[in-house]
Image 1: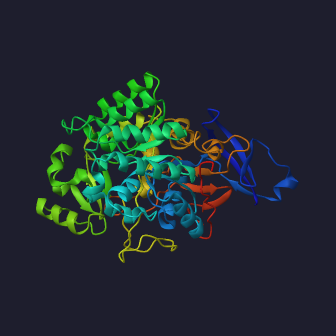
Image 2: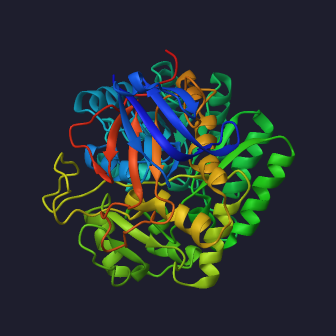
Image 3: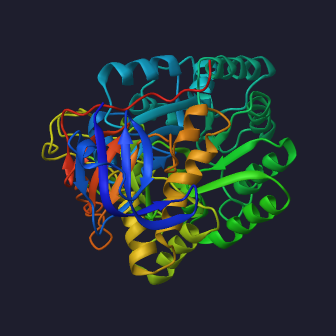
Length: 494
């Protein structure tokens, strides 16, 4: 591997809490030194020197919640500063196949997978064989069979399936509890007991909160917090902004109380007022929309931009194409009060930024391509392209709620630390210590911003000038290096 010297930048290292002007030397995929005058004139002849004066240099972003699993999607994320994208909330099954597929195809950034609670349950309760494909798995979510309570034998069967996935190197267990929101809470406890025994995190899309559904078996955020307190395991609460909606103050208070009590519970947020999922999700059933303060027309089909007209239209699409990706407007990005709620969730102490990035769908129905720029007509959720640049713009440049050091803590350092207990490889990520992985991002602090909208969702972020993965440039001078595929699979110890 070549030697690279990033010269003259503002180097921000959340691992040491330092923010200073310095050079960064990269050798053989690792951080070799951080300081000034690192190389002699003779040695400089062997290094690729990049002048980053006036730019911010820091560890690449670690995304705990990405569903892209493709070259096209990962390139959009790389342009947003992401160097590691992990499929943890939903997970994939079997993970052995997921890792093999990604490694065979090649990836521009690092990747990893949790074991999928949903797919394991569907195999046992619905007889649906999992194929390690998230897009195919979206059609599963509308099937009522897998959403039912498990018999004792079924419970043991899918718990055993998950245990074997952990033995195969899964990074934890992803639990889509919100997609089977009426299941017995004892089952949620059982899967968290398995994870705690194995010493791995769980990643939960929580079930309904009590403000939305007073009949819920248990408030979703309280359930996750209580499990963390009771079992002593590591529980990660996914996209608290979308599951809390306008009740964010209460749910964050529940999480803070659990932390004060010693619970190991982490939380993530993305900076958008609309989410994305398959239209067959349980919480998008017409009779469930009032609990979310939603109308059918708050749902937009991703591939066509068509807005759902009424209840009959919603029922028709849920029946004929339950896996169709859709945008769900749970709060209004343009409303100042709602925007303040997003900022509140982003500002929550030790909150992590995670994208919930979705796959890109092209007009012919395909979900990947090696073409760059992407072909016309591709659609996704804008968070795929813009989560990190948008967060930096909102929280650092516009509102001053984060320093650059705090931004890198939330986007790089803290998410990597969530994974430390599972995989030794993460200890070398999220910081700039000597010997750390050379996963780096170079940002223009005056220009960094997202460019996407809900109807124009694949425009890459700007102001992310360079991105290195394992010491290899995947973004250079603001654009993708099309022949760079240095991404590695990150697995728990086998």
